[in-house]
Length: 447
Image (spheres, rainbow, N blue to C red):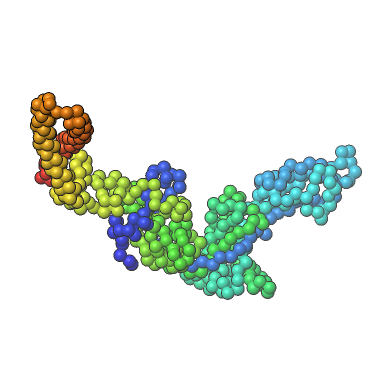
């Protein structure tokens, strides 16, 4: 027998179907245990139900006349000796003599051949009554199968230890009813065209459910073996090359595992299992065909294992590793990936921001120094312009143009300094945040 797959293996995950309680009820899932039982080799054939000739009685009149009263109809049950009709005689009289007709046997009225007022003769059958407590089931058996059976009236059957061949019989009109019969005898002759012979089985008919003329299906028992591991045929799914059953999981509620099996012989009720399951397993019978369309089920394997065992599992259904447990604890505590105690590629990003912030800080210092130098230049320009009272008009125009250029340059310089100060402040704030985050992560890694 192949080694069982681990519960978290890919094969087991793909083969496990997990349903909700409502899903089990909707599919009407039913399971039965795998058992070792007496296994029968059977042959299938068709036939019909017939009445036993000795249990059929007819009603007729001993005198000629006409029917003046009918007390029964087809399907009515009568007792032996009960009056079923009355016939008025043709002999003269006032009134003419009337004689009652009584049932010769008890049973069901299966035929009625007259109506009120019909003329009757002594040779005419008026109605038929059949005792249906026992009936015959007549099977058309191929001659080579007949040679492997044993009738009750055969000489070897009457010897000590001899038993007649049995058959499991179903009727199309009564699909939920099962009947068992014993082979009573064979017909008087075989059919040359079909190569079959009638095999007559006697059945008890509780409730009178079986009626003459019904079509019947026979599974004739040819041999029997003991201690054969088997399951009901309804549990077997798949095509002949890939047979499988659905085994109920021992731990997970409402979980069923698609299990390949090797099937031996099959009869009308059971299938022999050579390998694939154990006697302790439970297989799905009713609803097994529907499970093939469910797919992976309505609940994941992880969710089912968590509920069954009371603790977390990996997504594949396996047990968590130590690293996975730490990650799960950090996630629940609000931590991040650094709670594992190591970095995950953030070092390069931190170095970039650190260097960028330092460069922006240097630019801030340079802008402040440049701003101080620019102020001094402006004072010097003011002193020069204050002492230049004797310059001509041309020099004044040149200085006015220079002052205009300096004013525009100072405006751009102040804008640049403002942007630099903003970026520098943001860089300092980011450095503080990174330092705080690193401290928090270090604390998680030590927990």
